Image 1 (spheres, rainbow, N blue to C red):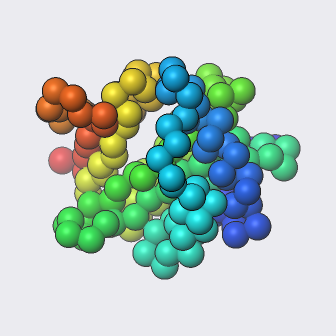
Image 2 (cartoon, one colour):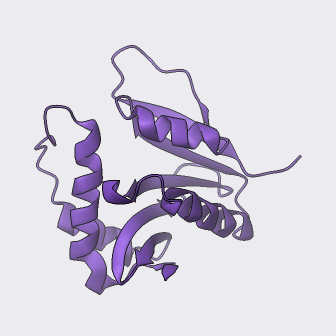
Length: 156
């Protein structure tokens, strides 16, 4: 059985492990060691009253996750997708599409009109996924490590 639900603090170690497995797929030289304490970062994301972290759970195991909120300094009707990952062993099974649909439903029911994200420039698979779901890339500068993409949540 597949369930999409809010991530609980007790899930944080599973979330960190999934995050690392998914990120490793688009770093050809291995995950960068930039000093980020991902356990602390995910605990912080889970504790934020202004954000949400959703997961896809299949047979009691987290196989997808998404973290989003409205960052400071942007219009209140804009949401940023900070993290979106599917376990590589579950690619092509609809996990990402189901999770994306749940995110869009949460955003539109919360009055959001625009969603933004940043995707690593080498993560072509994710870029194709987002384009298929209506996200549009913004112009990038040479040397940028991330591409900004935008999704209109209105049907006007």
